Length: 120
Image 1 (cartoon, rainbow, N blue to C red):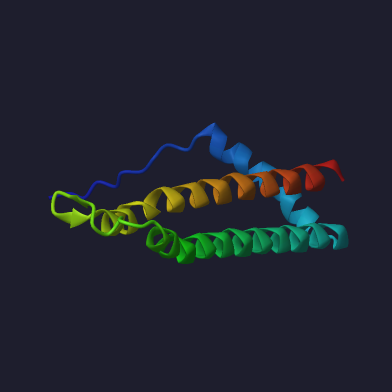
Image 2: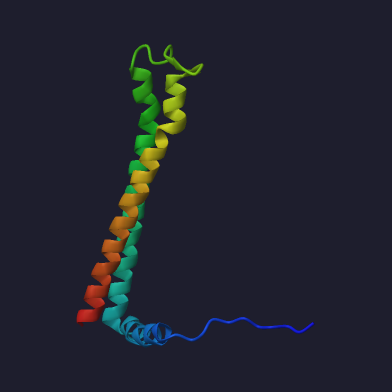
């Protein structure tokens, strides 16, 4: 039995991606490039903290909001109290929206960094 090594053919796009990485590396080595990178890291950290804080705030307020609505605990759907259903399944849209906002804002931060690093 012979062994056959399966590899992907080398494409042109792979070579062009390597050539675009060289200016970025040289931009990061300069003093101004390092300032841009530190700025990007700070903005991404700030964004992560804001989104996580907002998510935790909503997560903590969600049970309090449900407790404030009278008669919600007595309402049942398929034998399960409605407040338990909302606590169990209602938080998923909040998670999805938080993730979507984070990804969108993080991509915007990175695009700004690329614009700044490319314009120098």
